[in-house]
View 1 (cartoon, helix red, strand yellow):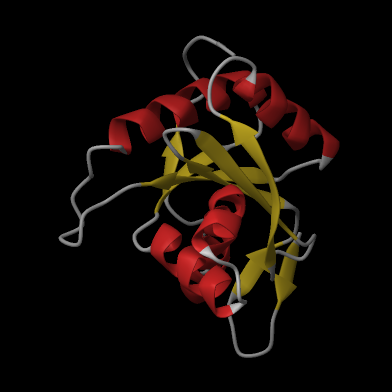
View 2: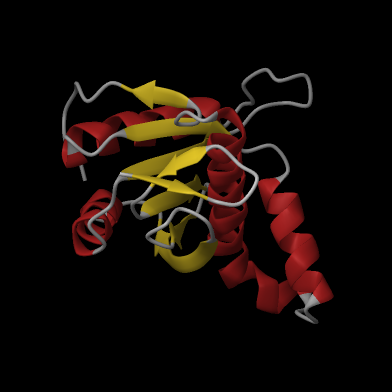
Length: 166
């Protein structure tokens, strides 16, 4: 199903999840059913059971697709954390198939999330547990906006082949 937002291209309706993979935590955000607005959802500790929790969130929210942040440099090349994000996306794609998983450029998402939380009066210590889910919301909002601007799903589709670890 498609939805039109005034002055923009058609957007597929359905809830999307944004996933920001950090070295310690995985931030998760959720869109509204119309694919217009992204909101922080939760933070999952990285490691044992994280794929189980992500798969559970996908099922609980009847998700159309999952957007995983792909760390890139200012020049648009993949950053050092990109291999980890690709691995998480690949395992998740195999785990939640047929729900598609897409990789999307996440440049500046954490920086933007820190700035927004700082402006809201949160100090560094208070921001730490929230920044990953806020970064996931920034990532997901950028993906939603890109789909609206381009008229097609954003980012790179991850094949659903591979093992389901978790």
